[in-house]
Image (cartoon, rainbow, N blue to C red; front, side):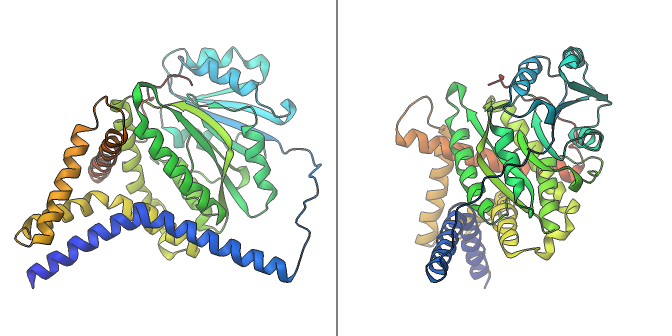
Length: 394
């Protein structure tokens, strides 16, 4: 009886991992294809003119909000980048919220006051505190949120804003392109995979979390974040989803960052993981399943992923306990081989085998970060403030 229970746990754990990482994208693609087929059949039965009239209305006023803590190395380039955005200057304001900066960040921001850049300094409270201070003070109908080390493509803001022509849309997530100095291709590969999921989730209006470097929301829908909130770019969109708004993805709204070093990326992932677990207590409405597409995405894409370290541990331990059975002996060998490949990581070699090893290393590192983030959250050791990721302005 005990061995049967262990066997069920092993297969369930592996099945959930495969479902989350491989099955879920296939579900999204299949669902999208089925809905597109149904829509095409409906058009054949009742032909309609799909051409849209050109929107000649003036673009809405936008507030571009940047939270900054000790960003003197990249802030000047960021401000110049924002001033060059393809959007009517009289409808674009730039707000910089200094989160207790101690370097030249505030002086740089003040030097652009004559060009319409507003500095709103404040004590060190974390990004949630900055947003609670800046968003209500903004004048724009749309609030575009960005990071100091993220550079926007000229048309990024315009492309974000055009999605709000749909009155059901509450927030729009932009696309972050990571450059990979030093051969950190596993980060860009994983980012591409996540971007694909966002693309398909966005077609259902169910993007679960935004890219912190570039996303937008209707300013009137913003409500203050609880003090201590770690991941604003997850909590804000999820709140809107829980309220029935659509959160969509706009891949043409592009921003660029450089991928960080291994140490800085691990630190960032651990912080985000702690914020993910914290969000479970900040978003109780999600458990009711506000919409089927949102509930599916939340459970399979997020919740199962967050349980990944536990599922991997159960699978490995269970396989070891059942090693006398040939099937589980082979399963244990496969898992140990996977972890050995991750430990090696492909080194500096090229080729498909080395790339797969680096992806395995990335997968294991991500799950270790989830485990570390869970432990930090459990101990209350992760504060809302952040340390700037050492990335070059792209």
